[in-house]
Every structure is written in structure tokens, then in C-alpha cells.
Length: 179
Image 1 (cartoon, rainbow, N blue to C red):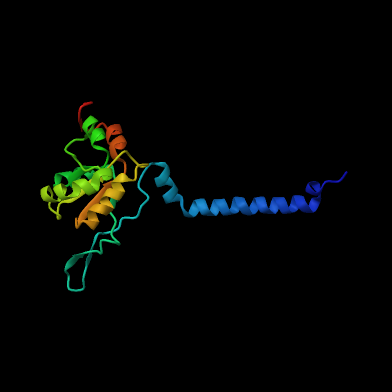
Image 2: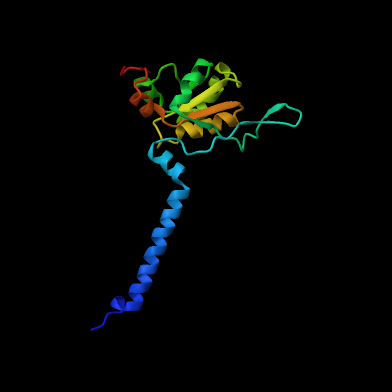
């Protein structure tokens, strides 16, 4: 009984497919090594996109709010930004904020954005540097909040993707009822 899968020509085809797959994976991994390393080390993979542009006359103007996105930053960038006057904005629910939050952060829950934005705009000027955060890399609320803040006219919005978990792992100060 001679099986089609055991024929020499089928074995050769299978071996050629296997070699092509291994070769493709090797080339793909080698060309994207830096990106893969950043993903596995838990760092941001989003490109930094500027929220402003310089015209030929040297004037800086805000980019179109529809096309603008918050710039991702990492923990190492926070100290310099905070010392320069940046403001931390917690995008998580108010209950989560009350339990624990980054020291000095204000609460602006993304889920309650429509109800809170007018009060927020009265308190915080549009030229204030804002750093949104939430529950870490799997949480989209900080990015989505950043986009909405840009649409509301805020000029300098950053997103700290590591959020509360990375902050805690680094041993940084927290505030709230659980602290």
C-alpha cells in the first residue's frame, strides 16, 4: 500500500515548503528585531507623532485635530516632563482613581468624558502639557482620552502607556484610599 504522502516527490515538496517557511521567518525576525525586542520588553511600539508643525515662516501651528494623536512616552520620560510642569490625568473610573492613583494625578474618566470635559476645560488651560494614563499597556482608555483632549483643543497631549502597573512596579509614590 503506497500512500501519496510518502511518495518521494511529496516529501521533496514538503521539505521545500518547510525550508521556505523557515527562511521567511528568519528574514522577517532579523528585519524587525528592534520592534520585536521593544514588544517583548514591554515598551511602546507606537511611533511618536508630533501634535504641531513648523511652517516655512517659522511659526508653530497646531496640527489638524482629526489627524493628531497623543505622543506615547515611557517611564524614563516622566520625571523631566513632570518637573517641567506636565499634569498627570487618570483615564480610569473615578472609583479606581479614589482607590489608588499616580501621585499628583487628576481624574478625568474616559467613560465619563462628555460629562466632565467642560469642568475640566475651566480648570486646565489648553496649553498645559497633559499626560494621560490608565491600567497599563492593555488599556486603551488613556490613548482614547488623549485623542478626545486633542479634539477639544489641547495642544500638548502625551500618553504614558505603562500606566499604573509600571509605575507601581518601579516603586513610585501612589495616592488614594489604599495607600
